[in-house]
Image 1: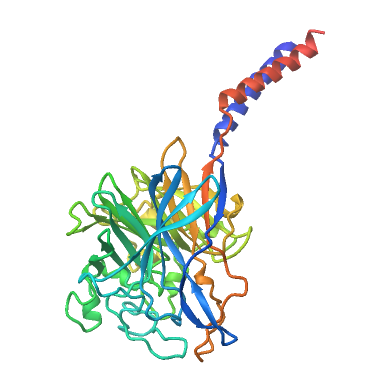
Image 2: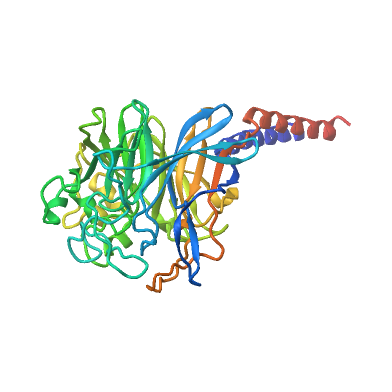
Length: 467
């Protein structure tokens, strides 16, 4: 009976081990990091010592993988507006095309595309659009000043761009911004085709329709927390559906303290049908739960997103911390079973807006959020470039995807308050721009593990009973 007992133990041990390997088979990843050096100057301003210093191109917020050029990986990215006050008020938004050579980790800028308005010549700007009410309320941007404290005029089409995709049908660019928030469509040369904004924008600014763009986005998006509008964009190339991700919860109901935004766990994902790119239609809205209570830090914002195929997307959800203890989480989300707020039936709890619902109350209301699965935390892989990983791209192929990330380094500027005398504080230890290529680590198959366990078990029994 001794042999039988041990054989049974071996059998159940192998059974348990097999199931454990299945449960623990979540893919491991590794990151190969490359410093993005040799970036050009955008202009010079007086530093804290009064000496002219270059502001180096950076602040990258958005990333899209174009494909391979030989062995090189080719991408597009773009800078955002940068911090206020604006050290370079005449800064023109641009798209940057670069290549990464994986054999030596060198990065080379291939092209710079300056973005212009629909007339093909007028430069786009980074200036705010309008102030329709008190700071912190709907349709209202921050007031922009220069380094001397002088007010900078608004630009109805000004952009703080935060995400980019390429429409493979015509190689045009779709981009999103934080101001309105807005969705921009540019041709492949950088000329604006159209801009899509929340309904009610022109009326809120006392202007005629069309002043700020075409109003097709639900008006509630105008209640975005200031500088927390659309942070990410992803494009389902098969279905011609575009997805814009709000960075932080909408302040709904709206107040100057952004009370709801700071306490809510609910983000919205907006879906546009762009089958006819000249006439996009809002076709969906989905709930993304931050699940912030599961983490030690305030993981309350989106960094970027990328389409993975089907109804699945990769999403960066991050905090504002630095270093190895920070949370820069990359999730796989799936919209397949999520409630479409535009087409499905649900019933909000009376007296509550969507953003005021808890996760449990969403269930009561009949709303299913997108499904989330944690893939990895960037610092765990050795990617610790600053606090803002804001570009996420996909390199397709294989059973498990490979990702690429890039960070927003705030142009190397300091977070300290600006003295208002024409000087700009520069970070004495500027955050580098780092491109991280994140690849799956090959793992032994369950069959190999099972075979090893069987050999070990049989060997142990043989040694014990066949002596």
